[in-house]
Length: 178
Image (cartoon, rainbow, N blue to C red; front, side, top):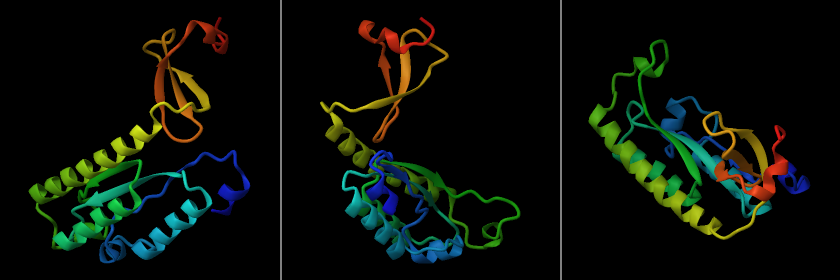
């Protein structure tokens, strides 16, 4: 965390998987942190880099997850306001401890919870994206696309997102094949 304070060149983005907003579910998932510890880490990072971008992973419908535990996950999402998230509904994997649990959540409920989580994330992502409109940012050229190599490149802005753009005539010198 301190590196973000000492090394300004570090990308202002961190992927910090939370999985669930419920301490009980995190315990069942055998995570070594709780929600308070997670949120404390987010706040420490934000105190060093207020503009920090966060992404996360979420799993909904873990065996035994109650409606109130799912709401706790939504509350974490509302508190952090992630720029993006990888969201999944729980699916049993043979050989895992969770596959042996007898209180699996109905598929329909898992799907509804996932849809609700995705909808909330869309709101947060849209809000963050709107804050970027009109800004000029430094970018790092990552690669040409294989589909339209002479027209579109993929870029990673130093701060956050992958974007596509059309090559302008005066930027042709960036291409190493011409």
